Length: 190
Image 1 (tube, rainbow, N blue to C red):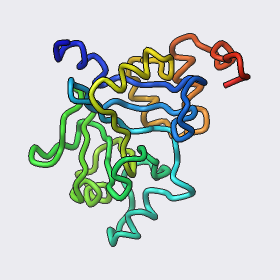
Image 2: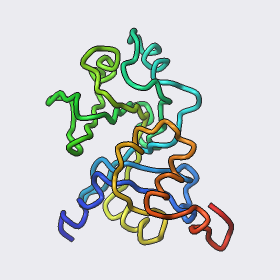
Image 3: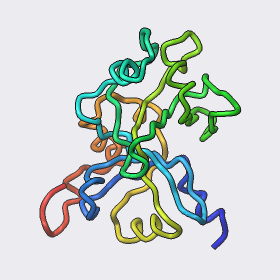
Image 4: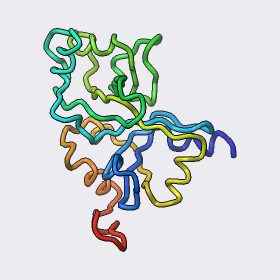
């Protein structure tokens, strides 16, 4: 397969179906940051990490000041590299040496400078902090899609930064005209 066959998932959403066998991804919505022939990397955008909010997390690591973006939950981005933070943010904040452009509207930064910027005038207008990420090896994500574990959808920045995490999975499905009960398998409901 060529790289173009893989790149099609970069910048898109994965929505878990009831066929998803891994409980860590039950009702998950994942933004795919990168995808190529070697694998994929994404962030779960709807799984809050306990009751930890962005302002608390920043205070815990010694960054003082008023958060300039929505003081939303810190999210569990996935089971890989669970001691590392990833900030998915609007394109109005960009440092060429530390930020990665994901699309015309979204960038990803995983260095401390973005956390410090969240309490400064140079803050992005939109941001979410995820701890850990979701990763797949070569061909793995394609197999999971073939096994109906995921539905692929176009990205919606409004959905990404929506702080109603409890209903984000339903909203993602609704963007495709799908109701959760339509996905119910032989074993029950979604």
